[in-house]
Length: 301
Image 1 (cartoon, helix red, strand yellow):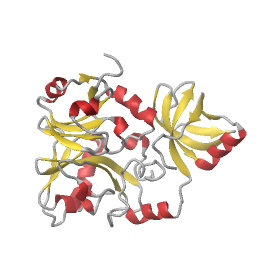
Image 2 (cartoon, rainbow, N blue to C red):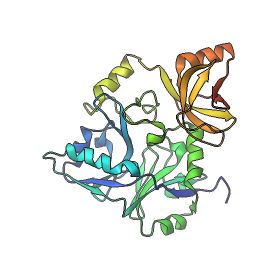
Image 3 (cartoon, helix red, strand yellow):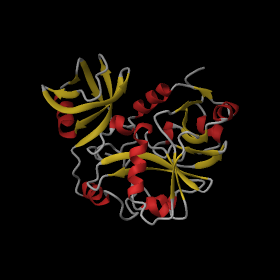
Image 4 (cartoon, rainbow, N blue to C red):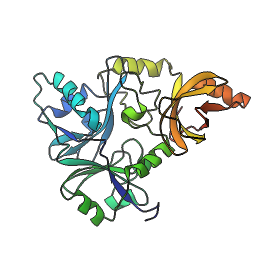
């Protein structure tokens, strides 16, 4: 197998849940950061569940399949997410179902992955596939596609479509190289701000959908230009620092390492100090490694 072959990896760190019932879209519309009204058989979105103060709690994709909205929160935090949704159910005509035992979250990437599925390089474009749904990653088409599929028969259907099995770490290397954060590995719950972590550029936020949890403070952050930090992909020269390792400049802490693999990681860095380092030719360090940041090609800042 070459790096250019289209492959698939089962994401054990994501678990599928279903929101069904006649009020399913309206229920989620008032809670999450993206416009759920856009979700259809041919359209998926990426969205956030925030605190009332606009801090990150959960991220997930939303796709439609067989009359239900399917979401993929992090597996280890899935029960907590469902518990929060149930708090807001009240009289909404919906059902909430944990389908992690019956369905898989799958990533398809490399080579001609999108073409093999018949998907365009258009964020969120979706099609029915193998008893579930497949869609171009709604954050960034360069990440490939996602699929929510029945566990039984998923691997056979994917391999019949020409995909070869690959490890989740292969996808992780792609994600890190593109500078894309992944859930609570990179976004600290109840602390991370969406705009510091470039989630607006990754299509997580609708600015014209109306109210949702955390909307007011998220909008205020955007329109008052209050962002002082940004998440960057960084190249490391030296041992990979553990997540949470401070990034320093002349002995001063100016950021923090997040997830990483090999010589690539993500780091949240103060923009003012990053500018000074570039102007003065200074070196950033984390642990025993030097840190060289690069602006993601898709970022607008």
